[in-house]
Image (cartoon, rainbow, N blue to C red; front, side, top):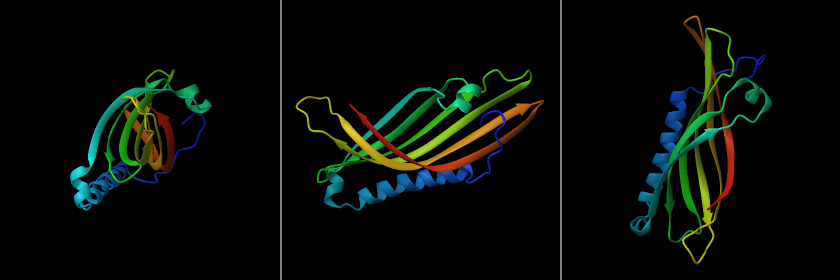
Length: 165
């Protein structure tokens, strides 16, 4: 939300976003529970993380400070599949850079994704991997001035891909 940009229309309430993420996680658990004998052999790995959110887009970079993010999720490895299923969520915030006196504002980002993960076979404990999938992201902007807060949000589909170790 840069200076001079128009208000964003509300496409999906934040509550709806929670319901979608809950449904994705529930679907993953139900599909694993229905796998019969594979269910007993399924390995689940949980993870949490966090870091800095660096504004890179020109409008965003010019108007918002570096922020923070936190994430967590679960990955299910099925012995008969060459790929694992990973479901994760992320939340982050960035504050306005140099707002006028008496004005404050921030963006809040919430995303949920589901991915397939392929781990390359290695002799040691280091396991390089590649992942790909998609999900939804909701960005909400809030500005407060004189005790009055205005906000707008937008939810969009996203595509995700990556490499890691």
